[in-house]
Image 1: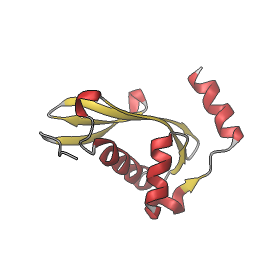
Image 2: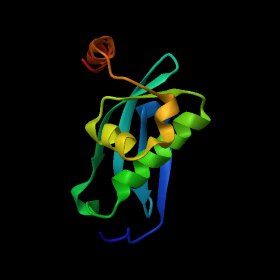
Image 3: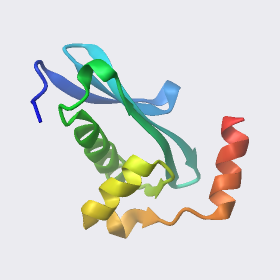
Amino acid sequence: MSEPSGATVVERADAGRRYEILVDGQRAGLTAYRDRGVRRVFFRTEIDEAFAGQGLASRLVRQALADVRASGMRIVAVCPYVAKSLQRDDEFADITDPVTPDVLRWLKTRLG
């Protein structure tokens, strides 16, 4: 796996309800969420093809989850990538809630 070629920053973009990873100021990917009370429900993570294979998704999700913890919220991982990340590393197990049919119905109404 190659390293990102430039300065990499993860930012929370509240207006878009997502975290973005920027490489040299250019958006390279995102992980999208919707908040349900104290739960941040992650439903999609994507990295632009031009930035694939650089470990950016892992960095993005790890920093997003750390931000959720710092915000005093809990995590619900509908997104398969976020769910896999949580399975590999139990650092966030204490603030992770399961995906339930109720959460899936709620998310579907939010996303249309």
